[in-house]
Length: 372
Image 1 (tube, rainbow, N blue to C red):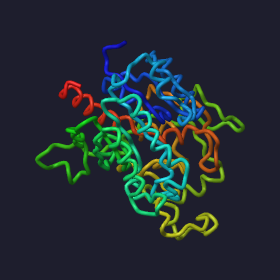
Image 2 (image 1 turned 45 degrees about the vertical axis):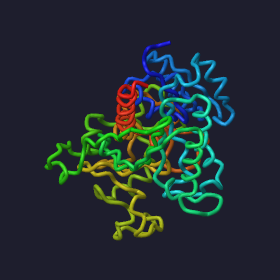
Image 3 (image 1 turned 90 degrees about the vertical axis):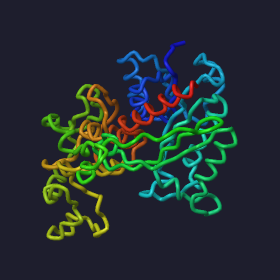
């Protein structure tokens, strides 16, 4: 077995969290993911980089942790890090917040089920901040998170948690997420310090770099390839593909940089599609001088200056993916229900790699300091 510290990834998605964990020095033994397109992305990455990571394409509820541990050739307690970001739609403040009434909410507890068997030194979980207030079966605010904490504590882990902003860690995106770090027996873990800040925060005693902006991170990509009618696979074009229908360009043209369609009251109601003044994030055009709003699965933001949607590659830049990383699978238009994750959704569902790296690096230091 490698002398490197070892990790196991659950709910791996397109591998954004895994990139950051690897960059901090961990060897990811396996990635467990159910979506077939995300698994294609994961397999291609591990084959290209020769990471030797096993991709387990399966419903995690049907995966036996003990069998997986044997297949990976490790013993109880040898795993250094168990990490993952379970599906968050059940708890998202932007969604219906079904909590434990939605079966996806139950996937949260798979983290504890695997931890009970593997007994890793540390468990790292990412979630939307809505989990903190999500109602459970009894209708009480915060009940879901309370049940999860009790589940983790019942197997002798001590959890700490914090809501962090991705922009503080070198991601060009105002994305807030909850991170839970649980260690066995006691918890002396300290959360990573932010490295970036708004301009007004960058002149104080502690030096901070200014937030990365949309304009800075997407600069240099050039003109995207147009989506070819009837084609869904773009495995060789590096994801820089324009999916904007011709009829949408007129609508996009009406929105100034940094604004959104509902604010354009001079535009006809037909073009505004019945939006209300509260719809401040729908049909939003990014601003070159600011970080992006949170990338979400249900919509694609407009390019800052061109009358089109952002390409998957531009979203990857905003999310902090390295340019060497490739997504596989379909590139679809903005709307519509899809069975498998298209490339825009693969990005939006994932943890930004720089944010994952910040946490994994801090975890690596903690493990070394504690001689674990």
